[in-house]
Amino acid sequence: MLKTEIPDRRSFILGMVTAFCECVAGGCKRLALSPPMTKEAYDEAAAEVDELIEKHGLIHYHEMNEDQPESTRFIWILIAARQETIDQYLALRREGHSTVESLEPFSDLLSYNPSESVHTGFDAYRQYFPI
Image (cartoon, rainbow, N blue to C red; front, side, top):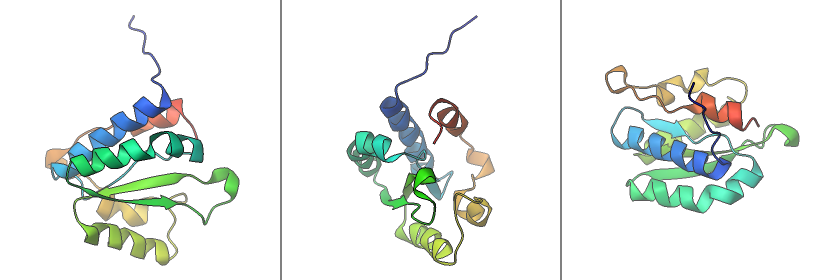
């Protein structure tokens, strides 16, 4: 039986962001959200995450879900190829939609192009590093 090692949080975040960048740069997603990061995880990896995103020629926006109680706050880094995609996401947030309550209102922005589907392992992040 193969034993799966749990990666350190910083490496896992950087690996996930790399996968998301490749997916957005390759056109299979319009918008990707980084793994949800606690303030501690964000401080650990944010500068390197920004470099990764910029290396792929993409743009990003950092958002803390200030609309949630402090105990459940986290930081997303939005990754997109075009500013208008991030603007559409932010317009939905201004309308009162919350990523914590449901990602459904954001599904058009976050959905995969089925012909270019890539699995990124987000569920693994949540298993190893619950927020």
